[in-house]
Amino acid sequence: MVGGGTDVEAAFQWMIKKSGGGDFVVIRASGSDAYNPYIKKLGKLDSVETLIIKSRKAASEQFVIDKIRNAEALFIAGGDQGNYINFWKGTPMAEAIQSLVEKKVPIGGTSAGLAVLGEFLFPALFDTITSKEALENPFSQRLVLDKHFLKLPNLQGIITDSHFVERDRMGRFVAFLARLKNDDWVKEAKGIAIDRETAVLVETDGSATLAGKNAAYFLRVSNKPEVCAPNRPLTYRDISVYKISGTATFNLANWRGNSGIAYSLSAEKGFLVSTQSNRQIY
Image (spheres, rainbow, N blue to C red):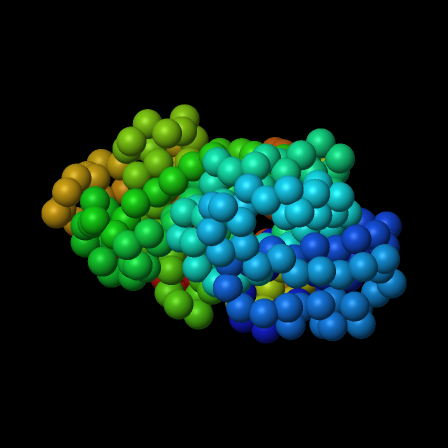
């Protein structure tokens, strides 16, 4: 899982190793096949291909389905996650991606590709939303969440986000968790948010390490928001945060980290408050 920005070579090398040097497939709904030469130079592979799937019709074509089912590594490129949901969700292509899970094929994504990896997601169907907007009104018409595009091991019950610190997305991420709990989608709301130029590499047992330059954040909360209503600022207290950077690690199976920084956040009438000594939210 890559947080966007400049690609993290170590993440692709990790996927190549997990693939056994097989057939590496990149999928996207726009853009080009520029990933092909980039990935080829990072390791020995049987093949590298990019599929640009721009419609539900294309997502039902047998050629596309076969290419994905036969992939030995699959990477979802950045772009517009709204297109991924509109064009791919509920199609034979999505079923083909899901079939890779049973074969333990490594699946990754960056930016919009990361956004669709969790069980829950922000599809940005009505454009993006800022932290300020989401905290001021967690029922904004632009704050619409979706679920069940994919069911990946270790990412059930989890929502993901990218470009985290760069685009100051902590506030909106807290609002996402608030909506998950308020709308009774989960018993416990969990989220993974990753900075640009940073990757979280998750093993089958749930253990996760970091690659790249920056940090990743793991948020969890079990209580419901105190105030989460249309056109009212969000109040949501005691959200646990665990930040990892460098050699710090995290385990998704037991939701515990090692050598990272643990603290709590609260939204108080639309403003975030941190328990860190410097009061920083990141």
